[in-house]
Image (cartoon, rainbow, N blue to C red):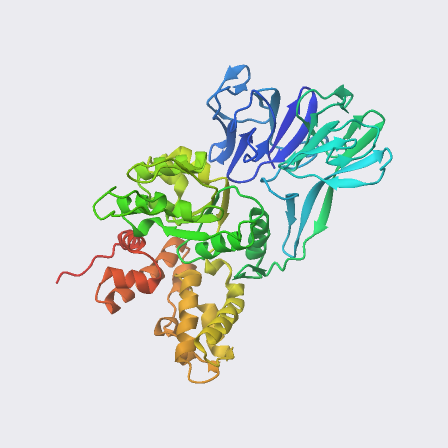
Length: 543
């Protein structure tokens, strides 16, 4: 597997495993690889996998040099070395044992957890700790976090010896990497005096006078049940991995992009992140960008002053203001107009905006989560979505799997929603019979979890006893499923698209081709319905 190896002089700092998607490198702690340096831009460059190979792209004002030549874009070959400020970055397609990672950087985190090791059965949080190995407090340790901690004598945040001066040196952690910063006393690392913020490898010793401290990693098993995250449930490997990632994401404030087909539960994911985060005391504010016109959406997001437009008789705070201290969730971000994208970029980047019609600049503290069922990267290449905005919202990307990829979760989901609706509706429905459950598990679910929820709610309402039976399920599920033959023909795209087209046409016909009522019944907005009709070639009959 491909790695990036980062050197400071001849010293190997770390090896970073390249994963599918884009890797951001720079001095911002929102980058995948974050390193201190005066000559590094906040986002200095990116490395991503394309059909032609791993591609390095410069995004800095300082420049990126490969082979003595400044590059804007470069296809990396094994052994290529790029110069990034005071660091060298070597690309290795197949690293040797001597070049194996000393540590792997992870996404930023407001708590002590910086790295997550996850598998299908559980996950462990990896903490970065500083341990005293020589001195009066030998054996004691302190967990490092993003907020720097002063180490030294009386008056320091961590007093390790009364003989040391106050704030002898400082330590903090960014992206799983410990950083040492000089203070009031001489600090030595790797035989050299530390004169600026410097990364510290796991196992390396920090010396201050006669005192020696070492940076270590410490794994602590998490007690969270990976079959559930917030209101979300699932035991399949893909969901267990997703829940492990969500637990990590919830711990910090970086923007997150949730992708996936319509109905997969993107809104539920966003809410779960909020409810499990440090912002749960604030509001979770949801805006569907596709449901409003450009003018109304701008006013909805940023608010307006009195007289800003016809009907604006008084000042109104926008959703950014309402979400201050909490989370703002923007669904269908791909429908935002170019002008609105510019305003969104500023609001995300600078955390400030002006209401529609003018007024004083307002500052907000908002965690942003956006969602789409479109391929934003393709829209960027086509010039339909701003590249700079894409990079701002794509700090963390989550892909919500379709229900057909997690069919083993269907019984668990059915039981969860049966219990929920039985309680909410006051219906004594206690179980689902075997035949009905088999039918539910065999159905292709083109509408994903949203369709399943609607089916179970309907079944609870119509159930004539305590047991949901086949007759309580919609006729659509009881028809012979034609998808098996299509799937067997290896035309997967068609196999998945045809059932969705059938469901949309059936719903349109049931509602007399009223698009608003149809969209409401399917749990989507009209913009999404129009897109799907166009994609499937659905045309309303002439009257």
